[in-house]
Length: 330
Image (cartoon, rainbow, N blue to C red; front, side):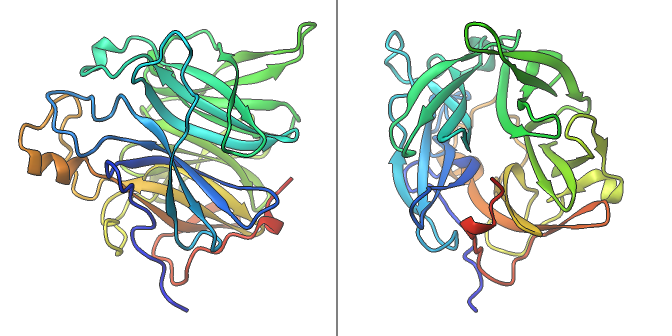
């Protein structure tokens, strides 16, 4: 069996595929990857290669082994803000007969972090993954929340986890609350505290609920019996994807990830900055060659399984990714 390609995917437009989320398109053999399409080939004086981003799409027709670019998602901006805006970290799930996208949205493409004072979560739905309808803004009481993750845990309630930048870049949760006028998201408070992190992702595997968060040195692993109270994994200081892989573009730690469960194992999709030298993201790089090298990103996959109460990651796959929709929960 041939080895999987490494990297699994690079965006052919701006070479900045980041923050992947992967979902099966029901009724077909296709798997769709949505991602933040950073404009990594831009040479700027600031961070507008990270802002002003669209949501890119790649599609696999061979069970996730290879991916083909499919363009960007249209229709994600309000009518009163038709210009270039910032779209980050999509979360796409199937729930109650529809696809749902939870997205971080910000106005414009500011060149400094100080210029973008508000980042909000917005909610869209779709029946086909191609055409999206705005549902509402997810109001959780903070103007600087990003990186939503959706799951239903032991209490049966739809729940979001997200990074609250106002609270030191920690993870908070919000639960769906039915009301007379339909319902709303109610913030529940901090779930995972310091050290600072982002990009929570919640899934069930091996009899446990798991949350991985990006600590910018690998993914920190937290375990829960009910998906409500969390304990950091002790093995390896609680980290996976913290040591280099061997594939091309994979010799560094894994960033902002998504997990697709497959029965007794799972695949974790993540991105890397293959040539990033820990340059401060607040500073633009004047040298175009340096910018093209350091800003570019690529998508990879690794395999997860559970041994007792420990989440184990096998980063160097010895066979292609093989996603089977019959093994999906729900």
